[in-house]
Image 1 (cartoon, rainbow, N blue to C red):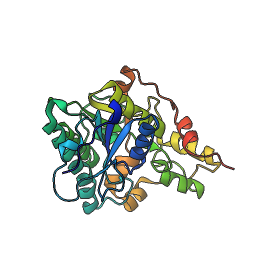
Image 2 (tube, rainbow, N blue to C red):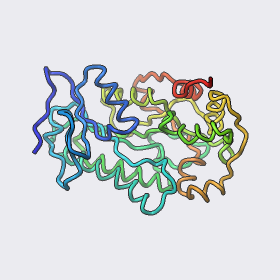
Image 3 (tube, helix red, strand yellow):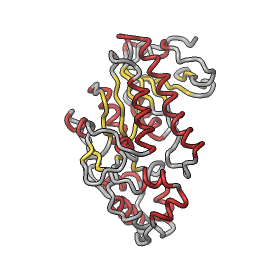
Length: 309
């Protein structure tokens, strides 16, 4: 049984699962820069006092690991940017999200009224594709593999019980070289970027800076229930692609046909990510007073990508 971990000198402590990913790493750095004590859950032998091993032995997470923490943030999940989504990889996408979330929820439920706030990742894929609709947090789940996955993911988090404080973060693709920009930057650098399908489909998006700030805001303001982590300004696939091409001083001309993307990437991945049309709006964040720093996709691209030399 791991030693109980509590904040030193009465300070804040937050537990983070999935700290090795893009968002998790940035969140941990931000918290520690402000003097917050962070315990990270890792799937390997611990290498530092702040690390706790979990999900490797088949044993449930000891609730004592969470005891005394203000919040536990679950950000686990295999990359949806790996293609194609074979039946085996679809199982990996589901297992890597639902299994850790259930483990966190069980530990939170076991602590009862002393439990920390459970802040669990989800994604805007919850809404599926809904052209012309305004997708706020009260809109029902859509119809797609990714929507079903998000539904199971969120249900696992709410398994913490009706007495627990639970938030699910419906995160938009992150505008960062290690996020949605990764494959687009490669194509742009090679001079073969252009509209994806018709290109006018609305793509929800968020900068890494605002993603981290929004997670911290959810914790500080103790927002519960679903929270859309997306920027308030509407942008299309063409808006993002063209902003990137301008930033890298490269052309934006060659259209990628939908049939070709389905052939290479698979129908599920193409329809769930590239051709999906979803105007996701951050009503919960806006209503709680959150201030977005990157209000246009051009600002986010400029923050994430160095200008062409």
